[in-house]
Image (cartoon, rainbow, N blue to C red; front, side):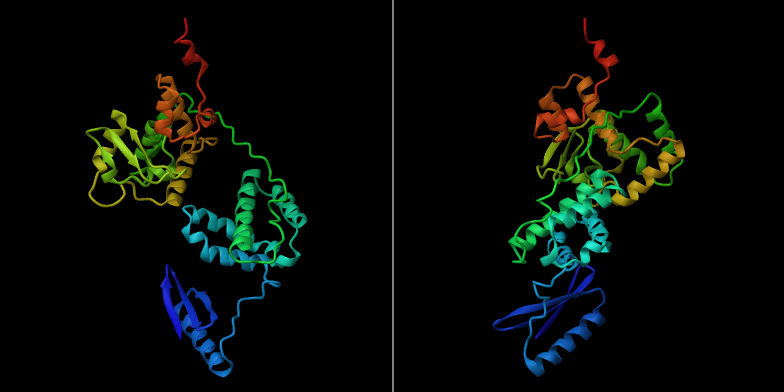
Length: 326
């Protein structure tokens, strides 16, 4: 009657009986799953199958988020960073409120409280995930909500504008600092970021089979906007990739978090503070324009489908442009 199977690092128990909804629970350890399955089977023997999912009237925001984490999050490409956001939400008192009592005013209070603690972009991200969880709960799970409470409030405005480019000597300092690093992949990834304009996740997911050194192209099958692209490579990019080509695995092995930590250590070592890794993408795209590439050509490399978005990343130096003017 009970089926126990491993799902990733967890153990899922499912109990089915004809004519009744299945009972499903997930446990971190198999002995706990076995014990719960035996207990439920004993109860069924005594009084039949009872569907024990919490009443939809009494279910809490936290229980909704846990179900979202178990059923929705694994299928999302950004499941790892979103799981961190869910942990924050689940630790907050808002997770203890029942759905029947949740209102836009409660979400508004959460927004205002968090804005005193973290950046607006962080609050915006948390509210976005919370709004999607409520949308799934209403549309797919039939939870008792007359409206999505997050959709009824104003999210904090995002101020993503940055015109940070590498200053004179900073690239040399980055390269010298990599010499003091214990990881071999830090320097080539930084160089490729400037030579290709690729995002960190794209760089860390380069496979040898996607690189054609003879044609000087790189295919990027998984991108932020979901549209694969093939980009041209500079001679420098090819010379960086060449020594690390292999038959099987990714060219650069670190996880996103391992790379982030290495990047932060590098910045501390060379005493550069206000430089994000994503700023190297700004630098690369600006350099492409300074080379004389057209907007469609730069969009081919950067992956922007809306040309207007390129201007968020493009910050030309007036000193360089004036050299082209009569």
